[in-house]
Length: 210
Image (cartoon, rainbow, N blue to C red; front, top):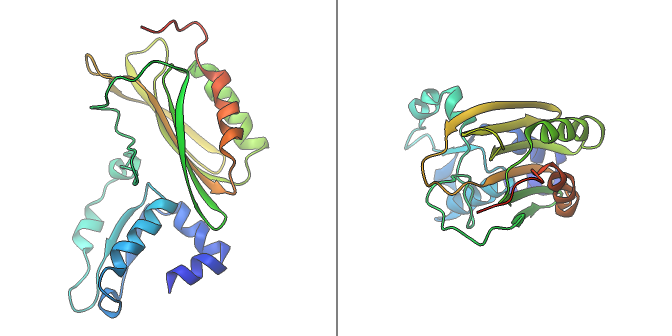
């Protein structure tokens, strides 16, 4: 069963961490509720993966899988257990530099999430993260996020696989939208404080807030 593979095999954990699509098959051979439990486990390991399930008797959602486009893969998917990468509809909190993080562990695979309430200096962010991913972060598998950046009214979409990083313009911030940066980092035995201390110096020090 997949839980044992994930427990005993590092390669299986890495494959889940890198995957854009995960198909769970033979669903007719397991107890009721098991597939939902497995989906939650896999989503905690890789919040970005699109999860599908099926079996020979009921069929497989092939049309849905084929219909996925690159835009779907690049879209930042909702993350389980109480936080989402969507920046819409959030209540306005007291403004502070760093509003917290969440983390999930499965053996040595860690999924970290960060929320920042101050805009980033994009040049500092790009330089610092580029150096970090190339020189220090061999155990970082994937990073995705939506950045609030000084000097632009557009969201910036950030994603990386291993040390290949891409920054691209997203949609404009809506009028009155609560601006935040959110990042999710997946890798092996990651330490939350290490990333927070790396990211905080990239925030715009000139930002005065509301």
